[in-house]
Structure formats: structure tokens, C-alpha cells
Image (cartoon, rainbow over all chains, first blue to last red; front, side):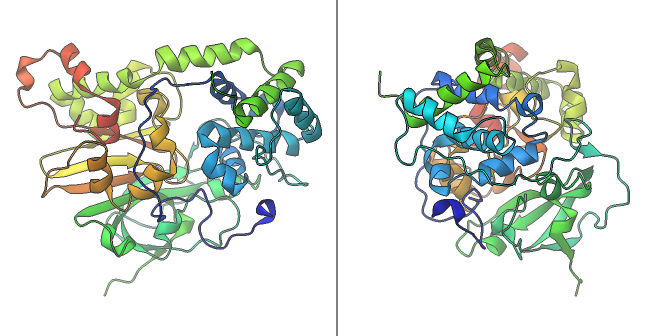
Length: 233
Length: 190
């Protein structure tokens, strides 16, 4: 069953460098919301605090990441958001999934595969938030400095993280130090903000992709716990 | 009118339940459409780029600390706690992506186009940026290096494209009209 699938490698949303995708399709319709329901989903995405169903962006992003993986790739951006919002509203007890199913059926839409949400029976705890912004005062100096070589760790593939799979185990160099920021890996799960130093790390394309393009540098913003120091020869 | 999608029906059902519970008003949806349809869009970013082309001090400030440099504009739209502007030059071309979701500098560019959020762009542009940009209609000059910026945390990136060659023949307002959303993402010349 898709809803109980466990992944060890990069998850479905972790798309950087994934093979098999074709040409970028530009849409002929340039309207911001081609259909009204998409604006409705956008508006519902702002209801986390008022419904007390989620209280930070990391928790929201994680809910989107754990919707049905087929839906993730086929329901579109606002379809993915809808799956995440529904997941969180059900987990918080704001909405009853059966009631929502019935209402959708009344409106004519309960086909197989139409429900992206994958609520857990027991929601993560909800820690207090200290505001909408994510920048925090540094509690200790950053461990790494400009031009220092580092290696990204490999994620365990469980829970929310902002460490893309295509840099796991890869060597890069610190090119900017951005101070301390809320750590998404704990904040998404209600385990506190645990602010961490944030760095821009620059990777050479040939170190990431055996068949990548030449003269190409890839820059990512990575939190200190994702990085290990490297001894210079 | 085509058949409504299952997602549109489910969104309608969820919206109705949230309205009944008093968490949402139908007018809130109209406000979203108005805000991102009219007030928050790529014209904001284009104003910043055009000014950077004609005002060297502003350009320098923008490259040093973009958030401080654009504070005077008081753009609404969120999603930009810290902005970094990256400059295209004779030797470097920059392009922006968010491989993990679809992070994007809303306050400067509005909401992202569909292709920016689709798996095709997110998977491929980190691995073969020249090819992707070329397929989208712009060839990065041979000999330039390409820098890809994957917005994996809360910092947002905006590309400062190269100005037109005959820069002096334009006023700032005309220049604003030359800057496209795609140029500020890095998939077009400007």
C-alpha cells in the first residue's frame, strides 16, 4: 500500500538529479490561479494558526511530503498542498475524514486515487512557536568558516529534512555563513526550533553527477548538522 | 468547461466545511486572487533590477545585502526573510531552483509559474542546467560557467541579469519593461 511505504533513499519530493523526466512544459495560461479551487487551497494554507492544526512552515512542508507519492507527482502543486492541508486538519481533529469524503461524494468527486492525504493516527507534538520568522540569534559560533571543505552526511530517509539526496556523501566548500536559523528537521516534528548555523555550500557538478555538465557549480543552503569537516591533505 | 478534477471537488468540499466551522470566508479566496493577481508579481523584481542597472551604488548594496537594499520598497507577499541577489556577468550565468518543494521569492516575483513547481524542472536543472535553459529558449554563451542555486533553506535567490548593451538609451521605466520573470529566475537572458 502506497500509504504505508517506507523509503530509505531520497523520497518522492526530493527530485534534484532524479532521472526519467523530460522537457519542461511551459503553460500557455499564465494566470496565477487558472482555476478558483487553487486560490482556495492557497487561502486554506494560511489557516494553520487559526485552526491550531499546524504552527510552522516546516510542519506544513512535511505534511505535503508525506501525502500519497503517486498523488505527489500527479495532482499538481495545489493538489499537493491540498493533500498536506487535509492531512494536518485531520490529524489535529479539525476535520473528520469521513465527513469530508461524504461531502466530496455529494459534490461528485470520490474516484479512486483522488485522496492525497495520508494522516497518521497519532499526530506529532505541537511545540510553541516564537514567531513567523526563522532567523535566530546565534547561541554559539558557527563550526565551519569560509572556504572550508565539508562533506554532506547521508540522511536516514526518515522524517523531514532539507538535505537533498543528490548531495548525500558529497564534498563541497563553504561559500557563505548565514547565522543561526530554526532547524526544520526538529521544528517540523514539534521537537523545538533547535537553531543551527546555516551555510551556503558549493559543489562541483562533476562531483555530484557522473554525467553532469562541465563548468557548473551547484549551491545549496545547508544546516550545520548536515555537514562534516574534511581534513586537508 | 471541462469536467471538474477530483482535486477541485475535494478542495470545494474542504472549503465548505471550513467555512461552516467559521475558519474561512469565501471572500478570503477572492482576496488571495486579488493580491497575487494584481499587487504581488514580477514587476516588483523588475523595478529592482532596472534600478540596479542604472544606479551603481544601489547595485553594490543589492549584491552585498539585498534584504536591506530592497527594504525601502516595502513589498508585500512573504516568503523572503533573507534575499540574496546573484549577478550574471560576461563569465557567469546564474539559475535558481528549489528541488525539495518550490521555494521562490514571492514578494519580488509573485507566485511561481507551474513549470517551476513541476518535477521536470526540479529534477533536471541541477544536473543539466544548460540543456534545460536551452530547451526553454535561451542558450547560455559557451565559455560561461553556470551557477545553480537550490533554495534548500529560507534564503531566497533572485538573478540580476546582464543589462542591454545600449543601456544609456533607455530610461529606468523602459528598462523595467525589459526584465522578465524568467530572466530573474535565470532561464532567459533578462
